Length: 103
Image: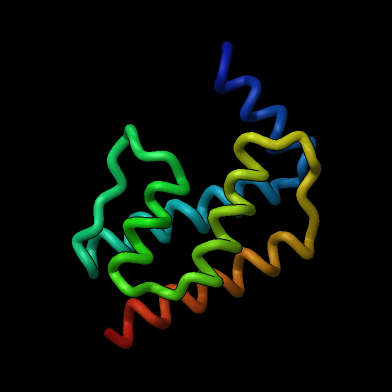
């Protein structure tokens, strides 16, 4: 592995895989919202732009805000993520997915 891949791999090891789990939660959000609601995340969209698109589709703002904030923290921040962050992300994703399934 070289370049960015190495950086990501090292980050995953340093964070105890919390980052990987958070990335997976965000990816699940993107996949399910595309499949169920037809809301595709363009490569050029920032996480906040995508969140705004999901909010316009009447998905719950609070959980979207929490999951997006944690994704941004993992992706762009320097703070380490912990078990509490993983629990918040899991709860937010669960809430969003329940809303998608209900509508």
